[in-house]
Every structure is written in C-alpha cells, then in structure tokens.
Amino acid sequence: MKNEVSVIGLGAMGSALAQALLHNGYSVTVWNRTSAKAEPLVREGAVLAPSVAAAVSASPVVLVCVEDYKITRSILATEEVAHALADRVLVELSSGTPQDARDAEAWALERGVDYLDGAIMATPSQIGRPDTPIFVSGAESAFRRSEPVLRSLAGNLIYMGESVGSAAAWDLATLSSLFGAIVGFFHGARIFESEGLHVGDLGSMIADISPLLGEMIKHAGDVIQTGIFDRPQSSVKTCTVAFELFVKQAREAGINSEFPTFGLGLFKKAIAAGYGEEEVAALIKVLRGDSERSRTA
Ligand SMILES: NC(=O)c1ccc[n+]([C@@H]2O[C@H](COP(=O)([O-])OP(=O)(O)OC[C@H]3O[C@@H](n4cnc5c(N)ncnc54)[C@H](OP(=O)(O)O)[C@@H]3O)[C@@H](O)[C@H]2O)c1
Figure 1 (cartoon, protein in one colour):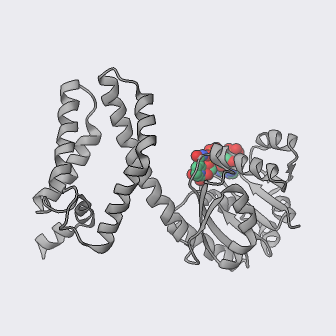
Figure 2: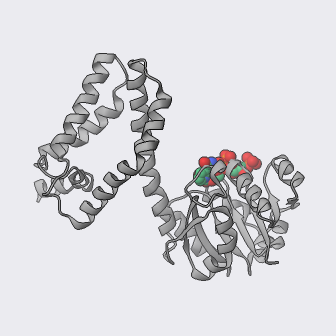
Figure 3: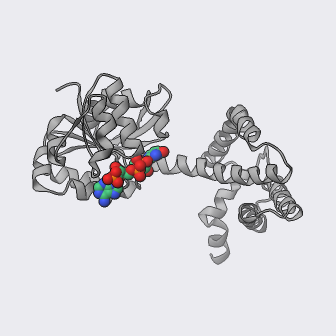
C-alpha cells in the first residue's frame, strides 16, 4: 500500500500531479468526471477507477484537485465514498479560502477522515521539481502520512502547522503579491509596446532582477511587522511620484491607465492621511482603514 496514491480530478493540474507521481514510481489510481482525460495517464500506467469510491478505496493517500471545494464536497458526498475514506488521508489541493479549509476539515472530522489542506504555488509544468512549492496545513498525522507523496510533487513542501486555514492564507497572500505584480507587468508591457520595445525583454529583465525586487518586498514585510515606518528608504511621497509618472506616460502615449490610476488613488489617500514622509509600507495603514478610524474617532 505504501506506494499507492489516488488522484481525483484530472484537469491541467490534477493530470500533472498524476503524471509526476507515475514518474516517481507510484502506483496511481485516477478518477475524473470526464473519463477521457485519464487516457494519456492510463497509457503511462495509471489505473482508471470506475467510481470515486473505487478511487478512494485503492490507496491510503487520496489527492483531490478540482475547480473548487464545493465540487470536492459534491464528489465525495455519497455514503459509499465516506465509508471508503474512513482510514484514508485526504489531501485537498484545489484552491480555496481559509474558511473553505476549516469547513472541509470539519466535514472530514465528522467522518473520521485524516485531512490535510494544500495549496499548489506552481503551474502544471512546474510540478515535480525540487524548487516547486506546495503549502500544506492541518493535522500533523495527515501531514506525516502524505509527506512522501507530496514531496515527490514539490521539493519545496512547506508544512504551515495544524491550523488548517494557514495553507490557504499563505496561498492567497502569495498569489495577491504575484498577481499584483503581474497586473503591473501588463501595464509595463503596454509602456513597452507604446515605445516599440520588445515585451519579452521586459519579462527577462524582471526575472533577472527578481532577487532584488524580492528584497524590497521582504523589507516592506519587516516594516509592517515592526510598525516602524519613520525611517524610510523609499517614502510614500517618492513612490507617489512614480504613479504620477505612470499616469502621465499613459496619457501621453494614449494607453490604458486603469492600473496606475487605481494605484495613484491609494497613494493619494496615504498622502492625505499624512503618511507622505513615511516608508512606502505605510500604505498598509490606508488598507487597514487606520486614517478613516482616526478621523471618525
Ligand atoms: N493550473 C494552474 O496553474 C493551477 C495552479 C495552482 C493551483 N491550481 C488549482 O488546481 C485546481 C484545478 O485546476 P486546473 O488547472 O486543473 O483546472 P481545470 O483544468 O479547469 O480542471 C478542473 C477540474 O475540475 C473538475 N470539475 C469541474 N467541475 C466539476 C464538477 N461539477 N464535477 C466534477 N468535477 C468537476 C474538472 O473535471 P472535468 O475534466 O470533467 O471537467 C477537472 O478535473 C484549481 O482549484 C486551481 O485553482 C491550478
């Protein structure tokens, strides 16, 4: 039983998980609503289970990776599946919120299922690499029992502890950082296009200097954590100027200005609240509503 794992959900991500497990020598049982998606995996040695219950029964560790938690719940809803799950480890790898994770854990506990919540911080083609991150949280027993399987999918497997919502919180906060940067990148791409430059070169440059950019993010995190905003390396005022330049350039070049206009709005609120000379991380106070609270106090 040791090297057996079941994968429920064979979209882009579930298929990549099953494939990586096969490459790592696991006996893999799969199930997907649309069974045709299992065909390439079956050709590589996976077993297509005739039902969800059969998939769950086949292995001690069951990974689920479907669109969302509601779908997981609907797939696992039958008595037969609940019975099959009783001594299994269920690892939810679909994306969700911390509350989704807490609800799923409560559902699993009621049925005596060892539950681990996970969040994949990678694209399907990045699965199985030593540097691929997966965040997990929940019962330590579930983590220990599924750790070898998960490590073969993601060398950078990070257990966030027993508080089951942690992995989803880490996931959403990390994705927010990423997608904020990605939207900014798309605006940067429009600046490049408006100047006839190669957008591919911008992507390469960002990748090259990303450790330095990462240092800036880390510094902002430390500033917010310590609450010491009055020794700025880059002040709110300085960064506001950058956003004013984005808006000015967009007007001059006639390109979309929604992203810089949105950012400038936040920075203007920070200036109005008197944070202009503080570290740029003081923008968090606008997001917390600190200035509004002090105005109405
Ligand atoms: N792709 C990524 O880059 C990535 C990265 C990190 C995390 N994730 C997360 O991984 C999860 C799966 O993503 P994906 O990229 O594999 O998505 P996907 O390619 O769209 O696959 C969706 C999966 O959900 C199943 N599904 C949808 N509705 C269903 C229903 N009503 N009943 C049963 N099954 C249903 C699909 O089954 P059918 O094949 O039958 O439609 C398929 O297996 C998501 O939560 C996503 O956020 C994805």
